[in-house]
Image (tube, rainbow, N blue to C red; front, side, top):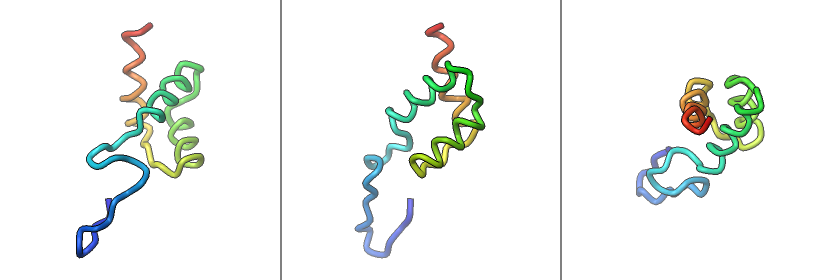
Amino acid sequence: MPRDRNGLFHQNTLPDYKQHSDVLESMIIKLYSKGITTREIADLIEKMYGSHYSPALVSNISKQMIPKV
């Protein structure tokens, strides 16, 4: 998150101290279950939403799906 001298900057995409969107995480799990690779998912998320999710992060999020299978 960028810093400013007066501490007045607030980002609009995520609440304070939240690093990931629940909606994007849900989408990642759905895409992964359809057989799309973690690298492809990371690229799609960045192109569509401008949020950088590394393939490793996508992999960690998609591991949440394993207990549900």
